[in-house]
Length: 429
Ligand SMILES: [Ca+2]
Ligand SMILES: [Ca+2]
Image 1 (cartoon, protein in one colour):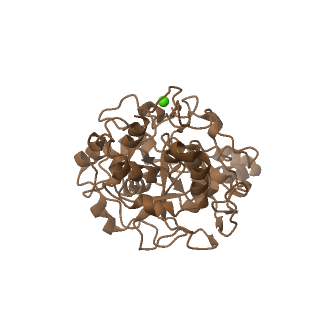
Image 2: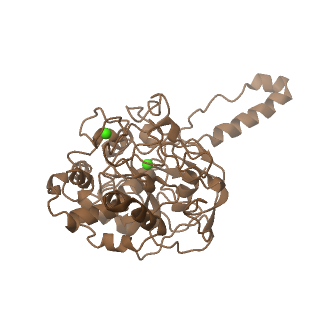
Image 3: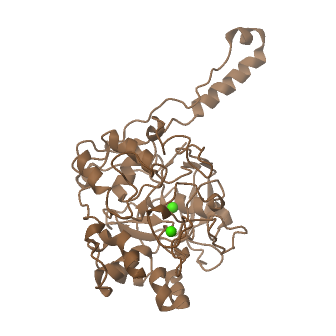
């Protein structure tokens, strides 16, 4: 019974990639080790989330409930247009008083500094411009934080998928330039603004090149992807209701506005972030944020960095029998385990980012390749034309602790729209 529940949220994936479990089987030592250590029952939970889906709903558990009600698989993707950001400076504050300047040269210096500050103030995210629920200052553990906040991370060098505990291959260092990463996963309220703006469809796709990482040529929207977007807004609304039990989307604003938006495929998240004036984080950037850069944390909250402790205060995840999904404090898995973003105060990373471990899996820019295609790199992303899988990171409310490790990585079809999949946006300041 329990396994059946486990299947439902991810059912839509199976149809897409029946061989996936096999391919995952050959994956990294982490998953293998976990399976060996935990034995058969937990083995199910330990298989990479996406793999678990394939395992069960694509064969072994023929008794699994039809995932039919888990929503028809979306094929057509939707997207928006990388509309230019709303350039309104958040705090375009008054910059000075000419009369004072005339009287006091030092004020002119202050004014110049103020002007510089104003110029550096990030533009308001398109999704929060309307200040609607879940898209205003109503996120975080106290419900009063900016849902679109995007704290700066210093640049640095670290080792990808490395944690000094069980991920110990130092062969893949990467350097990232300073970047901003959203504090929170994309909320239902923010995504609603996108849908209501008519974005994310073939009729209104991102502009060519939108959402690019400015230091990575060719990383913006490719018009060939327009065909992967839903035909129109009505279709998009239908597709993001991908699972009757676990979807957080509601056609009208409701109780889920501050919860993480799920049922998003890679194209959806790319297009959303581009419209929001941001972009998808590269896999290296995402890993850097979760690992606390050169601290190389095991989990985003690990302190000391080698701590493997995972507590309920850290994340919404699946702790296995008997309680399974305890994100909402109630045994069993339900949509309420997909928490309002930032609820788990003690799960924040080194630079204040919430839910990098758990709640909802997050898409990254890169095409998935295992092992990493480059031994070392700077501001890199794997954008090879071959490969239909994109990187997804961080685990979700329905998956076990292993998947929340900062170094853990998965790949999934870019078109996979799943009850466990969502995202968060980044930008280059
Ligand atoms: Ca629960
Ligand atoms: Ca997450």
